Amino acid sequence: MAPPIALPETFVRAVAGLRSVTPRAEIALEEVGAPQRLAPYAFALSATVLRDDDEVATGRLILLHDPAGHEAWRGTLRLVTYVTAELEVDLAADPLLPGVGWTWLIDALEAHDARYRAAGGTITQTLSTKFGELAGPPAAGDIEIRASWTPLGDDLAPHLEAWCALLASTAGLPPPGVTALSERRPAGAA
Figure 1 (cartoon, rainbow, N blue to C red):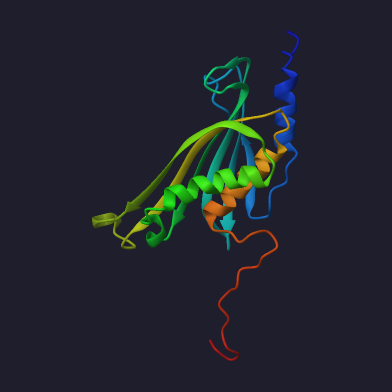
Figure 2: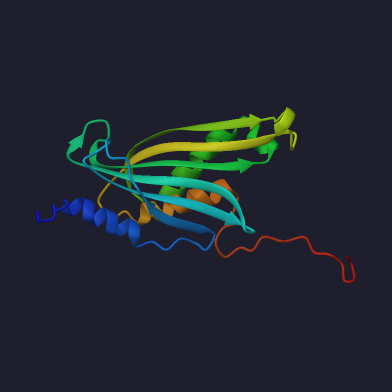
């Protein structure tokens, strides 16, 4: 039997930092298979965000590590994310949405002291209308955030906390500790 292959310490510490975070209750994280061709070492998490038992957003966070470094990354580690959520049509049609989506990411990184460089990405907003056999609600909207950044250091816990904050913002969750007001019916109402 061949001896196990030793993983680079930087990668081991980075994965440990990701595994150390417990997200807020509405966010379920799961380790999933990582793409194998992007870097010599990779690790991935998927997320599902629930609001009132409805899935309102999903995401994937991939950690890439190349001990030799990567010129475009400007480092040896890279975090890559994809987040998507359904939105109300009015929000999805707002021309300011892409800028707001990018701000959710950058603000989350900064609020969690997740030091980084070389951030880049795209924000896509879509509107869909169903016809014929697929007819349903008149229109639906979505936002997709695809981004990557190079963490400074290998303690990635702040980066995962920031990513969870991005998921919460994208899903429209209230800030932690704030309870959304629900519709209240008057006493005796059916």
